[in-house]
Amino acid sequence: MNAKLPVTPLASWIAAKIQAAGSRICQEELRAYQLASLNSTLRWARQHSPFYRDRLAGLGGGNLLTSLDQIASLPFTLPADVREQGLQLLCVSQSEISRVVTLDTSGTTGQPKRIYFTREDQELTIDFFRCGMSTLAGPGDRVLVLLPGERPGSVGELLRMSLEQLGAEPVPYGLVDSLSAVLNLIKRERITCLAGVPVQAAALARYWEKNGGGWAPQRALLSTDCVSDAVVRELKRIWGCEVFRHYGMTEMGLGGGIECAAHAGYHLREADLYVEVIDPATGLPLPDGEYGEVVFTTLTRRGMPLIRYRTGDISRFRPEPCPCGAGLRLLERIRSRCDGQLRLGGNGGLTMADLDEALLPLPGIADFSAVADNGSALLKLRLCLVLLEGFPVPAPALLRKALQQIPALQRAEQAGQFDLAVEWISCRDVLPFRAEKRRLRMTGGGPPQQLRAE
Ligand SMILES: [Zn+2]
Image (tube, rainbow, N blue to C red):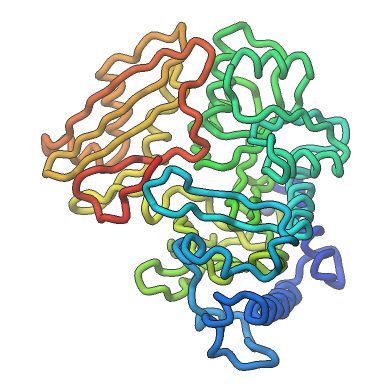
């Protein structure tokens, strides 16, 4: 069945960027390119950024590293470094910066994190988006962009520019507010593909199904938040839509990796990023197949290169090759974050992705927020579920049964230590929650770093 799978377009894109001899990737050529680019980044950062001048002071001149494995000897860059010393990481004057993205503005963590990009850095992102989007769209497609795009250089705007380069027709909108307005636009513009946030896309499909159907998109790129299997199944069931997961964060330059038609994991933007998986406790690199924290180094960034940046995302490199035959590494999809798991006694924990898989299959659920507290032996879970109008409130027994699919909750229930409180919000048309990245909020006993603002 895999014989006809198209090879990810990232293969020829990376081959061209690294000036490979053929159109297929040869691992030795890619590693040699990455080593050379890594060394230029180290030289550039040490020369121009006060932060890295200090951090990399111990490295010799000339060829800094002689093999990629030696990257393990370099110090990590932490989100706190970016937050506290942002401008010290810059390698160009502020006049050369064309876009600043401010993250973590909720205020509880002190200073916000700012990421700086030059025009050249943004061009690299547009180029990656163009290649990535060609996995699912091409000339003749009308692509609805349900991501923020009001500001110059925002993800929605860069995606729009990349789609224009691809010959597809972008239809920019922004995050979903009114479900009916977006569905009317889908019908009116005969949208073939959409790019958006997972729960919002699922809510659109459910609202569409409840309200008479009509024109439906055929392919979707879902990004920003964890993309659960539950959402992928719903889009396929309702719209017959093929979903492609994207992995990225602002620090990566927005784009990081995208699934191919095999849907086996992300192919990464390996000509612009060097990605590692490390043991979050010891900081040591892990072999393929083992789960750890994703760490990346930018290879082509000029404004604010990041060296061994710790993402907090947990994943692993799949040991087996991708069925598409690209010869590129596959990073398994992200299911949890170092700080996003409520650790429970014994084995196991609870993540927002677990709750997504359990709750989103329930009929009519458009979104939810969750607060967990395990300050005592009792695990308290407070859910606020958004139910589309016209769907009956699921029976409490059904909801409990859905939650019991999560082993940690099943164990707590069996031990008589699970306390569930549920609140419902009815949604007629406008989605009440607007967070792009949803988080399991935690109070009580977890490790202190688990306390994160929404
Ligand atoms: Zn593939």
